[in-house]
Amino acid sequence: MVNVGGRSKGCSTCRQRRVKCDETRPVCQRCQKGGLACEGPRETAFIQGTIVKSRRRMKEDQTEGGQTSTRRPDPPLNEIIAISPPSQVDVYICFSRRYLRRGAAIDLALQKMSPSELVASTNTRIFPQAILSFGSILFGTHHDQRAIVGRGYALYSVALRQLNKALAEEHCYTRDEVILTVATLAILESLVPTSPNSYLQHMLGLERLLELRGPRSFSPLSAVLFKSVRHMILFASLRTGKPSILARAEWKQALRETCSEEEMQEQDLFDILADCTVLANNESEALELLLFLDAWRQRWEGDGRNAYVEISHHGQTHFGFLNQPAAIMFMFYNTTLIYVLQILAASSTEGEYVSMQRAAALAVCRCLPYYQQTRRDDDSSPIVHWAATTAWTTLSRNECEERQWGEDLLFTSRDIVARGLWNSIKM
Image (cartoon, rainbow, N blue to C red; front, side, top):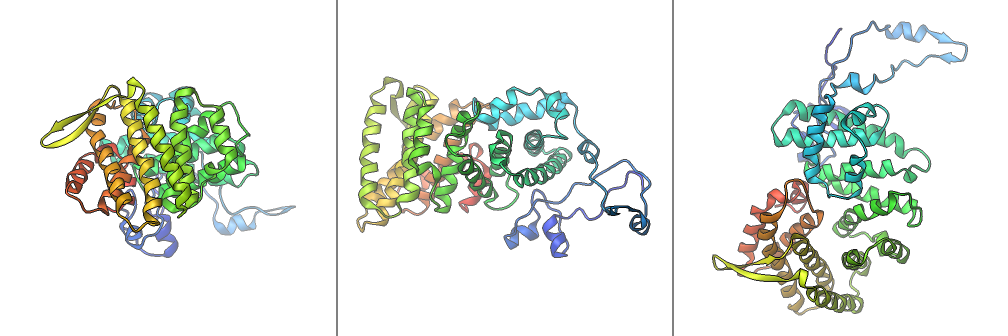
């Protein structure tokens, strides 16, 4: 029939299980309650009607080499869903860039493509498919435009299928576009999750791709690419308890070789977090990391640009900074400190390390009011997402007078933290 939608719009998981899907977006309630992976219900696909041979007739059509395939090839992407004009695509992309770190790999890749180029290459390249789904879903969700969200998820489904095909190819890990696509989907799953902890699957897959590529196989974009995804890799490793490749000497060296003097301070903290993924209960090495962190803080505070003051507000103390990068770096330092203290607390019967963890978590909380006041709508820091969720997890398992204040402050800051990350710590 002409211009008629396909069969069941239920998610693929429910259709495979032969149960009725409630078609709730972004993931159906049946899968969510069952803890199953869910790509969400399918959007109705309108295609141009054509006369199709019956199955019997198709089986009868044979060639000298054997039977013809009974499966019709997928129609072009621009026939499966209605691609928005470049002007509208530009709106989606501009909106989505507020969730991307400025100067990072995905942002740089977007700067090299105009909206018309994105639309034109959607049929053949996976990164445009992923970034258009990213922008459409975020824009549609924020503005409660279900039709736009539906088109975004249809694009997402296509991007996942094409990504799986690309991953099946030999040496797929050498393609920057593949890694950019996985990173884009990991961020999307962090912001608008389709299933619990689905972002972790993308992040762990990202680490595997980089491991196969190796630290020395740099393309012109690789140095920026590796730096852009290291926080995802370490976050996933620490959350799942798996050793990270970034703890290996060759990876540390490769990343340091591309760091400026200012970036080296941040890389120091990344290296410590990488070590935390492999130390387990090694108290002596954890103490060495604690001493290194103490020296790091003294050097950092010795720079006048990082000065901060305590501000009393309604009986509680907040921190004020000279600039936002200093606030973010201080949150990153305290996040790193929490993970080192966590190792020490696990091997000690004294409560000193637990108290220090709590103090570090509260320090993160005291930075958030300044960050909220100074952050721009067109920029986002993944470090703040990480710091806030780490602080929440730490305070939730510690009883203290200031716990409720810290938790209330973190709760009111949920708009600056990815929804998927909040869901993963089971608020």
